[in-house]
Every structure is written in structure tokens, then in C-alpha cells.
Length: 336
Image (cartoon, rainbow, N blue to C red; front, side, top):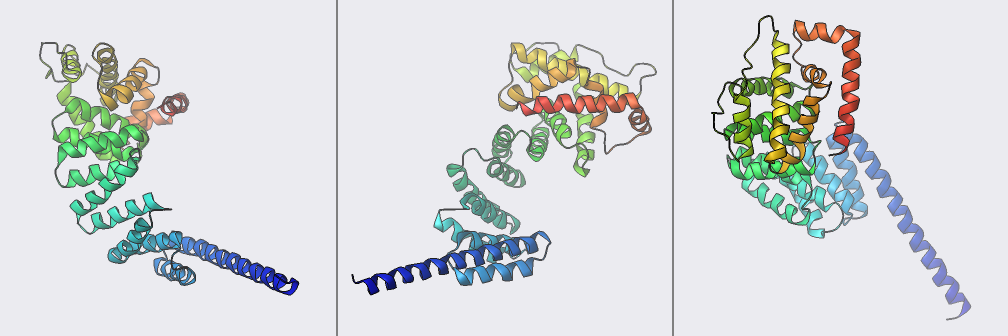
């Protein structure tokens, strides 16, 4: 190669590289702009911006996914499906997100069996992702496939203990199946994670209804090797009917404390399986034996403010107790 040809080739390479870098910078700028518009709820503007990015590079995976996501946010599910499936076909970046988006599109379109097929494929690739398991659980719950829903909800709660919705789903499913001990444990954990949302009001009502039945001597007089039946048996041995001058909250605290201590004592001899034995029972047992049980009971009443709760919350010593409980519980949850 002569000197002139060598110089020309070098300049050509530099120009090509510069053009590619400029193109990448332009797409990245558009991606940032589109995400800002999407976060503001300006979905049509976001769609137009991501389409500009794809005109520059029609094979750009991230721009393709972001366009699909904006279509989904704009409730244009057919268009969202078209582009999210393109991401799946590439089988590279944003694959998990594309699976979740595709399944969500099909779910919102009412095509639950098809959505479950997508989530099942995703579950084979991503065996330890809680959202895939949760989506399968909630879809099977809607389809009234309660046994399958239970399996997936339990996996989701175990993989991601801090995902409140998984515990709420577990509670609802076990209540449907008549497993009151399991349902109560899940409601207690859900309320620990999410005490101040509209969902927590109904969860607390359901929990108190379950406690009333559980504590009403339904366990019988025969011990059992089944930990849940044994729990019912142990609970039936003590009369927790309201004492004279005992307030509603005092009654709730006493029932909760006894329930938690019973869970722990049973678990030592006849361990509960999975989530109930590895997560719920040990935590509640420690809580039941600690000085934090009363603050916890008031803490989960954030959306149910009675005169009694309001009065308790106003006292400075109780405010300090609540802070101490939150610090203690934060340490407990960090180890899950």
C-alpha cells in the first residue's frame, strides 16, 4: 500500500468511527429524552422520540424495548407486543424485561393462558426471579387454579421476602383453601411490610376475623405431627376471651403475642415447611418474646386510627418505642 493510499484508508477509518460514535451519542440522547417524557406520563411524546432512535438504528435493542414499554404505558398493547417480541427474538439485552412486558401485555388483554406460557418460558431461563413467579401466581389465582397459584406465590415470597404483594397473595390463597394459620401468618408479614396502604385496611380486617376463629378452640384436644394442626391444638389450650376492662387493642396484642409464641414453640419440635418455617415462624417467635410486640401491633394499625390508637401514638414514650421497634425489625428483615 502506497503512502497516499495508507493516509486515505486511515482517514476513512477515522470518519467511519466518528460517524458511529456520533450516531451512538444521538441515540443515547434520544433514549434519555424519551425516558423523561415517559416518566412524566407523556407517552405519545416518548413514543415519537423512541421512533426517532429506531430510524437511526432499526436494530437497537434498548430503543426497541423502550418503545414497547411506552406503548404499554399508553395501553396500546398490540403495538407493545410487536416490539417486545422483537427484543425476545434477539435473545440478548433486556430479555427478562421483554418477557415481563410481553406477559403483562397479554395479561392486560385478558389472554391469561397465553401470558402464562410466556412467563413459563421466562421462568425456565430466570429460575430465581420473583416477578415471574408472582405474575404466574396472580394469573393462576385469577383463573382459579389455586394449587398452582400457591406454588408460585410461595416461590415469589421466598425469593423476595420484601415483596409485600407476594405475602398478600399467599394470605388470600390460603384463606380460600381454608388454611387459616398459614393465612394469618402471611397477613401479619404483609402488614409488617405495608402497614399504611389502602390494602392494609382490608388485610387487617381479614386477619382479625381469622384470629377470632383460630382462637375459638377449633384446634381440638389431640396433638398432631402436622405443625399447622399442632399449632391449632396448642392455641386451643388457652382461653383468650376478653378479660374485664380489656380494650380492643389489648385483646389484639395479647392474641398476637400468644399466637407468635406458639408458632415458635411448635416450629422447634415440628418444623413448618418453606416460607412458614424459614421466614414467618422464627421471626414472629422472636417478635413475640421481645419488648417490641405492642409497638408492632400499633404499627400495623396505621390506616385504622381508632381513639385508642390515636391516644397511644401521641405519647412520647410510645413514639420512642415505635422507633426502637422499627430499628430492631430492620435488622431482622436484613437477614432474610
